[in-house]
Image (cartoon, rainbow, N blue to C red):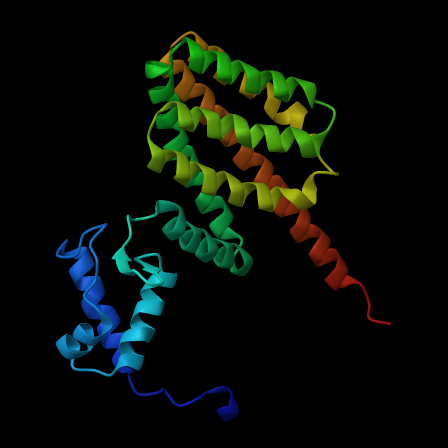
Length: 252
């Protein structure tokens, strides 16, 4: 057991530089587009050597805070929502691997967010938006006999509804939540007819948004995602029964 643990190294000076620069960014003392002082000046300000400053800048660059332009300098970047959500998504993937319950928590969160998203989309969708959504529902209809392709179009249908809201954060959150659900369904596509379970729901959602019924869209999406949760529950139960049966078999 002892060899699994390693001594904690002393705090590096570059970590302290990172913390100070992040505090300046969060406090808006350094804003997107601002150019950092030259390396020599940063060393004097922080009273550390060049290796520490260079390591700190490299760390903040990887994190998406800084843009290093060779021959020009180091600039503060605009916040990139995709970059931060990617880390968030990776954390959820880890949780999904570790505990089945997280999958149902993700599905529950998706229901809360998408219900309101459908209502918002129904209120503000214009003719071009409805035309785009109609194209997505036609794509679903074309793949009723192909679970894999249907699922891909299913996710695109939900992304499109989120896109209609015009809210980038809503779109990104729904995109990453639906992707987590998709990954959990991949292994069950051969055993279940995804289209027969979900397509009637999609038609109801489309009809409600097309008729600009915010209440109807919210209700249709809520019912659809509850069906999705029931599907996930049945899938998890089947996998548990399969595992239990395998464990019960005598070892030869």
